[in-house]
Amino acid sequence: MGHSSGHDEETAGASPTQLELIDHAAQRLGTADRSAPRRTAEWLLTELLDCDRAHLYAHPDRAVASSVAQQFREMVERRVQGEPLQHILGYASFYGLRLRVSPDVMVPRPETEAVVDRALACIEHVSTPWVLDVGTGSGCIALALKHERPDAAVQACDVSTDALAVARANAQDLDLDVQFLEGDLRTEAPDATPRGVDLLVSNPPYIPDAEAESLPPVVREYDPDRSLFAGRDPLRFYRDLVDWARECCASGASFVLEVHAEYAAEVAELFGGEGIVEAVHTEEDLSGRPRVVWGRIERAEAS
Image (tube, rainbow, N blue to C red; front, side, top):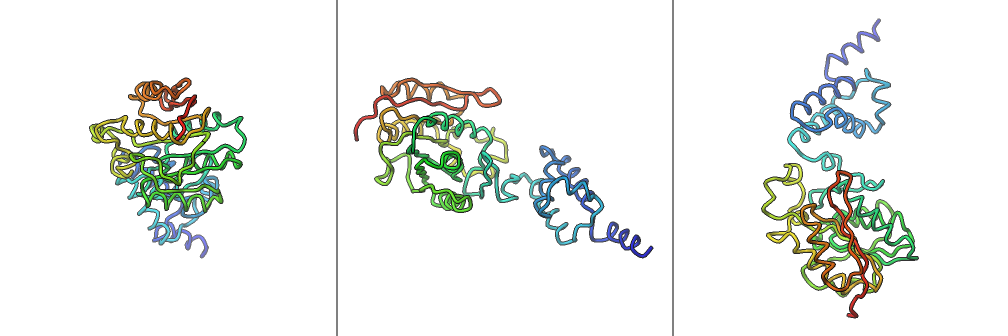
């Protein structure tokens, strides 16, 4: 008898059960109009308890220590306020990899996986390809490519030293040998940048400043501005990428770029009109919006 009364005290007292925590958090997140409220609550609690979802529901009445419950409620509250789940957890999943994220880098997006798919297809028949990822951020594209193609020599650059620190930490966590260097797209390719690369890949900032207000708050308030915005000219960084392609790419190399759906045709035209490109293709993401522009460099001028 003593045992069951102790259990009742736990439920009513400071230590709630796993199910009570999830139910309450899901309701709180739902009221705040956050997407997938229950799934989010489960995700946060499994992270804190270091267990899987099945375990939560196998032991719904198991009490959660009040200190853990408090930590959980604080995490839920951060999500209610609009902070991205990936920032709260400290990591994001991308192409099967677990990557650290922080306010210094853009949270990798599922649609960027289409860039990796196309990039892998472009180097499928190239043995030990040289790859250059420009504007690497968290390192997500470069690391996914290295993970899928261990024989590739992958270099990645970014203008932000803070972003590069995150990318290097990710490479270390995953034990992937990617070389990171500082480089600004708006200047000439740095001397350390490889020449004769087989693949130039980039997801540059492409949102015009004028669109800032229309972005979801989770993007506008938490992703770094320099990763998002292209200023007044949405093609600004693609113009620079044409120069980088000319300078860094071998003849017959490929380029694969993520683009703003509204400007995909203009990016394709920009690359197609440079006289260095064989053919330019545009690909749609899962929601049917043009997301990737890619092609082959026919003639890179000798630098």
